Length: 155
Image 1 (cartoon, one colour):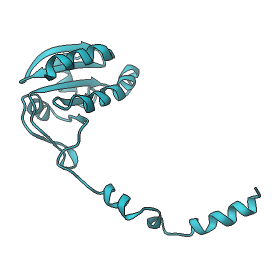
Image 2 (spheres, one colour; image 1 turned 60 degrees about the horizontal axis):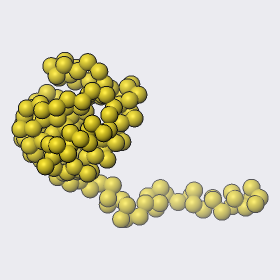
Image 3 (tube, rainbow, N blue to C red; image 1 turned 30 degrees about the vertical axis):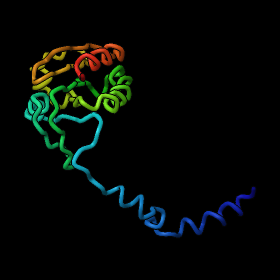
Image 4 (cartoon, rainbow, N blue to C red; image 1 turned 90 degrees about the horizontal axis):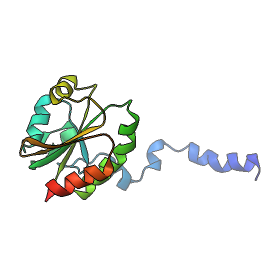
């Protein structure tokens, strides 16, 4: 295939305004918000953390409201931590499977006062809370132990 042909076929597409590349269906979905999105929720303050583990409703960024649930699991991670990066997609998958649990995460470098208060010494550290009380702690990237704790407390 010649270069002249390729450039000739691409040029009409390049001259279009960028808005023509997005269909109305895609554009409308880009700007939709909902009251709650499933998945893992980033906690940025001690106040939001304590509300979440005590089963209170928490308003997070982008008008996303974390509903009240009596079980929460917290992932204490760091952006520079290799095992944290490895287990993050597994943690996200578990959040879709165990919908009766609030899945939370804190960056220990962003909320150091909370990390210190919780006694975080290694990353990742996972803590399970039921009715505001810590009932289990898992240190390290251990998917089987996470799943076992979720089975135990999500019922």
